[in-house]
Amino acid sequence: MNLKIADFFIATFTGGFVALVVFLFHPTNMALAMVQGGLIGMAIVLPLKLLLMPIFGAFEVAIPLGIIGMGVGMTAGMLSAIPDISGYTVIAWGDCAGLLVAIIIYDSNKHLTQS
Amino acid sequence: MSAKPYDSAAKYFDLFRAGDMRRWGQSQQALFKNLKGKVLYIGIGTGQEIVNFPPQLDITAVDLSYEMLRRSDKRVQNYDGKIKRCQMDAQTTAFADNSFDSILTVCVLCSVKHPVPCLQELKRVLKPEGELLMFEHVLSHNPIYALILKSMSHITEYLEGTYLDRDTVSNVEKAGFKIHSHQNIYLDIVKALIARH
Image 1 (cartoon, each protein chain N blue to C red):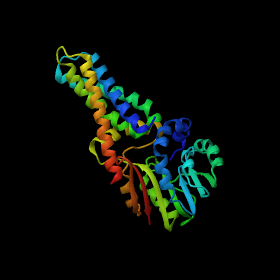
Image 2 (tube, each protein chain N blue to C red):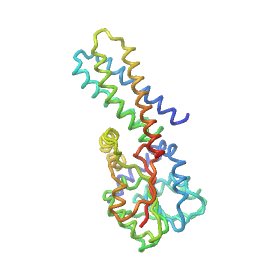
Image 3 (cartoon, each protein chain N blue to C red):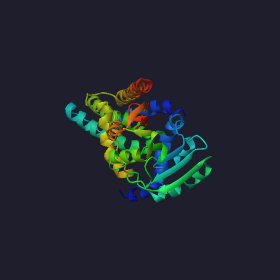
Image 4 (cartoon, each protein chain N blue to C red):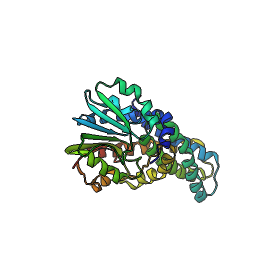
């Protein structure tokens, strides 16, 4: 598979996975949920990085997953604290946010490597 | 500087770097085209980059770790050119002044303890008209990327003795080189650099 395409899949999957795990913790207080989500996200992406880096490249994995771990974790935590929100909504947010991070990094990389 | 961490990492080195090698092959080939004359290759490791070298070069390759050098046997034998290997510390090489036309480092300046003295040593053995070619990763100027690299640096330092927070471009200039060419390979983290006296 083209490694650049793989970057988008990895980011989307990681975003969704982080959101799912954060949601499963059933946070109730929004401020606490944000902190808890960020910490959970960072903890999840660490083993994922170690697993994926040898296959897909160190920095190409570490940078997006570093952002997704904390960013998606925090926002998914806050979303999960909203009463009656569906798990699918939180996961969809995680997927979208992961994909967005991949797109921003792709664009940033294109800009930096062409200048 | 101790070879022990690198001897231990040698076993897993090819696995750790497999993804990077898939990503960086073409960029390395483009940089390595500039190698000429007598070449000093610092930190050969297990010789993963040899496949990206142009043929018929006269290369002296050094590495601190005997285990790394031993694992480079097959790649050295398969190279269509001359590669002589020595176990040596890049910070205190045994070569005479002005010995080489080109010097190459690939992800080395992130591993040595004192990068500026190491670069000064490379300057000493490089001929005045020679070039220092570097394929290195450095600390990003973007604060978000930099934060991630700094936090990861503790882990990589433990796993393979690599620092992710080095300002190599500035270190090269501190050592007395002038940057001749500077290209970003991935974001502003992985760079291909050419420096001269």
